[in-house]
Image 1: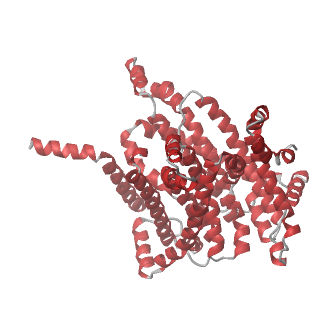
Image 2: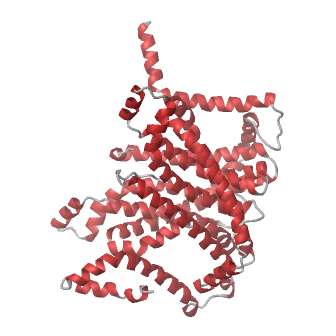
Image 3: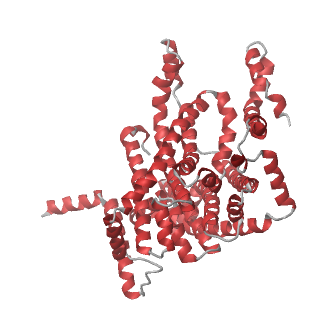
Length: 285
Length: 262
């Protein structure tokens, strides 16, 4: 598109920056987008044309591919419909695991946020599990749940649970004490407090947790399919890797990345909508 | 008498949280051990603390545990070191030069969002089962927290300090060494905390795939052998290492940059 045309502009814009004010204004508005898109296009072009400049050894060629071939493979996978069955398998594990993580993480987060005693008792376990890469449990989960859907669901669940739980907890802890006291003065029960004050207040935090959880869940699906599964997009990728079908590996990576970006982007929209009025919160991964 | 009581109660009040936490951990292990008095114990499926302790004695006595930890630590530190060396300067330049930031931000976001672990099979096949393949997996997972945090840190640098250095005739290098780097450091340490977790994932993925030694290899091999007690011992070891690393960095953050404590 326009990217190739805007690429040479930076140098020119820099030179004229002082005397051509209107042009500079226009350029300044589009500069971030143009440079960002430009660098991506540039990378793809360089990648595409590397084989023309650098002689590759026969062994390396087995592992090398160019963007146009990856795009072709991707197109073929969608056109022939061969992508849907494995993608469906992966998506099922993703959806069940994430739903279970939401179902368990939110109530537990609210509970721990409201009760100091439970918080103190669960804290060591949450710290330990959150710090540990959940991947370490994969061989154990495969042993317990067998090879197939449920070991994947378990990995996704464990990955997505903690961002949701911890963010819900933070959101509950952040609730305005005055509001809680007001509601309580009017005779509200703990359930009313949760419904009227705590949960609405924690909602933006929960959405941030959801965004992090989606990333973790996608990672969980990929990794668990690599090691303990017989079907799914991750399995397609591993098989392709051992058959030196590099295009398929990259195509799978692009599908996973695209889905991950699309879902986190949607949640980010929701998040911006909800947090527009409050100061920025830093939520580390 | 009354004094003793108040001291006692204030001690409990002060250390309530760690006491309750420690109590819960002890309770957890005790319950785990005790439940097999009621439930039939199947050593092919589950383990219990006493069996795990025996597994530990076995692994430490034979020296396997430390050997494999040493083997796993090489790609971990090589990859993480490379991530610091490349990620921090790149992030600083991205934050400091707006145009570089515009150009690289979307690209890095895409890389960060895509499950790069997915390239592990290719990397392992290409680089073989040695250190280099695993170190590259570790690097590719752990470099992004350094880039993004260094970038965010530079953008948060106090403009006043920069102007002061410029007014006093400081050059570009003086800016970097006197203002930018010191104020970015807390961000980098915070990034390191995230990067360490991702680096551990990298080591484990690499070793699950293809390895003949290392802690990740141990876990999957003991799983295949149904040596659940030793498998649990290795899993617990990884958990302890992960907690020590992340909490250690958190502690260092609090100690070194108390104004950022949070």
